[in-house]
Image 1 (cartoon, rainbow, N blue to C red):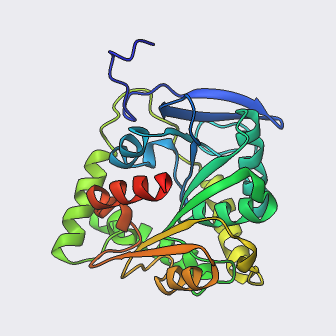
Image 2: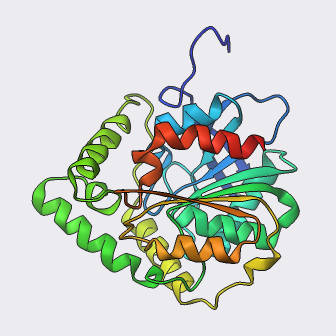
Length: 283
């Protein structure tokens, strides 16, 4: 395709690749010659349309960016996984099917948990990781994410608002504005949108989160990879103490905590975060 036609996250076509008995739906963007691709691992209940276009376009300005739907989610086929380990295996299957020998991982929330499983299973496959709004196996409050998520789904329903407004952002004026702004950005893609997640897949993911939250903590000292850990200072979904815990336990990590921000700190502060992420990936 002629690059004179501007390709952005909001209009890039959705493709599909078959591997391990699954047709994985994915989108890719940015420089596809040389350099390490950045594979994005998505949050609870999310599909391709839940990635912030500002972050995707921002990283794609310098990197080959790829995001995909896990099995049984969005437009990907198969039955949804109900464990982080299985989701990590599926991600590894997808990455290898794309022919990538090494990738950088960008894991947000549940995606950050999948990223940790990937790096422990296949360390040679990973160069660097960005872990946002996430925590370690057995981390504080992770096994009760379902309770928080379902409570905010109801809050959203009864107030006519998107639950992300409660789950991802603080209830301060800045947080509320940032939430509205993200929700507008997520609507920028008007055509060829992904399929919404099914209730079955959502329930399977909640089971995976619950099990992962009760799992024995992993020995993260074996992960020597450079890691950028990012969160807001007031994360209700995956309490911010988990980000600090990860930073203590990952020997080659950098911690970035945004003020007056929640779970979606990277979205709220995308204008600050994208240059910092690019600098980290270029180091």
